[in-house]
Length: 110
Image (cartoon, rainbow, N blue to C red; front, side, top):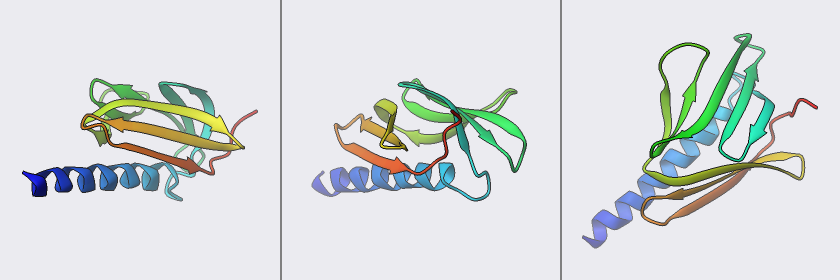
């Protein structure tokens, strides 16, 4: 049981860093158009499209303008986004109580 709990914590951390890799990726070069505590509106000049990242049920999901979504982080209890010191701060609390927080240097549309 202790081994399982350790694996879940590790998996949560990997999921969180995979999400950071996605939003900070040169593949999209995201810019923050609008930010709310529970949702982000992003723009990618590479694809010339808008995207939403939001809390949905027990996950953080990435959606485009049409149907479908990609789960970015799963097994979450709560997520919040804030503009802090010119950066985007993501705070996640997982269902097991583990917390992760990170700053991303994404440009904000003023």
